[in-house]
Length: 488
Image 1 (cartoon, rainbow, N blue to C red):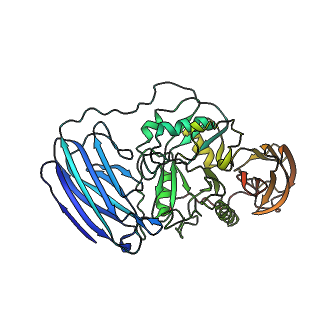
Image 2 (cartoon, rainbow, N blue to C red; image 1 turned 180 degrees about the vertical axis):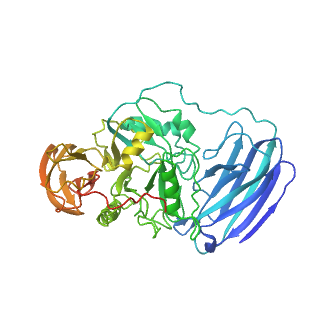
Image 3 (tube, rainbow, N blue to C red; image 1 turned 45 degrees about the horizontal axis):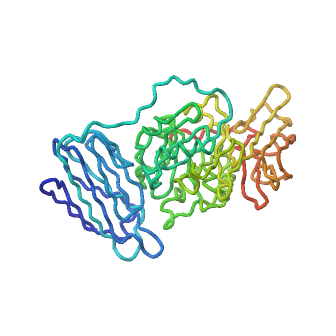
C-alpha cells in the first residue's frame, strides 16, 4: 500500500492517493489534514477503481472526525463519494455545524477488497472560506403528548435511510412508510452513524413513536444498539476491543444490544453480514434477530432460528426479535400497502416479520425494557398469545420464567387470530415440535406442562410451504441459572 498526503494551495487542503490489495481488507486507514480558521464549508471527493471485480463490488467507506470527535460516516456503496459539510448543511450520514480549526482525519474503512487487480484510490479535501449560513436543524415539537399506556405495540427494530446505504430513501419517507404499514413505532438503525436521528425525532407523533439506534456494522458481524443517540465506535479488533465489550458498554448505557441476522450470507456478497465472533456465541449478548426481512430471503432465517433454539438449549435466556432491515424497497406508501396490526402484507413481503411488544407505555424506554424481558412475539400478520397459570395466582407471559417454587403442572393457554386458511400452529419445546394443528382464522388451545417436561416452550405459526408467519418468545419452565448480562 502507498499513501501520499500533500497540502494544496488556494481552497485545496490535502490530496491523498493510494493503492490497496486484498491484504488491506478489513482495515481502518486514517488520512490526516488540517482545517484553517474561517473555513465555512468542507468538501471531500473520494473515488476508487476498480469498483466491480468479477461478480462482486469492492467496498471502501468513509468515517470523518474533527478535532472534537466523530463528524459522520458514509457507509454506502459506490466507486465515488462526495461529502459536503458546513454550518448549515451536510451530506446524509454527516453532521452540519461549525468547522473547528485544527487536525481532522478521514478513515478509509476497507470492508471488502477483492483479490486480483489492486484497488487505487484518490481523496481530495477542499475548503471554502467564510460563513456558509446558520444551521437548519430539525426541531422536536414542543408538545406534551401523554404516551399510550400498557398494551401490545407493533413496530420495526431495524431500518435504514440515505444516511447510510438506502439510496434516495429519506427519513421522511421511512416515517411515511411506517405509517402506511400501520406501525406503532419504528427504530432507525443506519450503518455506523446517527445523523438521521434529529430528523427522525422531529417526526415522532402520538400515532407513531420514532426511536433511536445504530447498526454496528463491523467487519465480522453486525449488531443493533437500540436506544442510541450518539455514535458508537464499532471498530473492534482482535486482542484489543472485542464485540463483547461493545455489548457490555451498551448495557451500561441502558441500550439494547441485538445480534443482527447472524446466519446471513457473508463475504463477499454481503460484507461482514455473517456473525463471525466465535467468542461471542452468544457470550453476554441477550437478544438475537432471528427474523430479518422476508422469512425465505438471503438472511437465512431458518438457520438463525436453529441457532437461537440451540442457544436456548445451552441455557442462555435469549430474546428473539424481528426487523425488516428496510432500505426503501420493494414496498413504499405509493404501493397502497396498509392494514391493521394483525393484517398480512401482500406479495413478496407477506413473510416480513415485525416485533409485537407488550410494554407498559409507548415510549422508547418502556419498549427497550419490554423487549429485553422477552415480552414480545414476532409476526408477519397473525396475532399470538401464550400465557401460563398455576391456578394459585401465578401468571406468566412470553419472556417470563416460572419460579423455583412451581413444581407441579401449570396450564398453558395459547390463542391465535388472523391466520391464513392454510396455516398451522406448532408447539415447540426445547427446540422439538410436539404438537401441530390447523390454524385457519382463529383458535385457542390449553395444555398442561411441568418443569420436568421441558425447559422452555414457544409457539410457531407457519404457512403451507413451511414459511414462518409468527413465533413467540419462550416461557421458561424454570428460573435462569445465572445473569449473562454482566460486563465481560
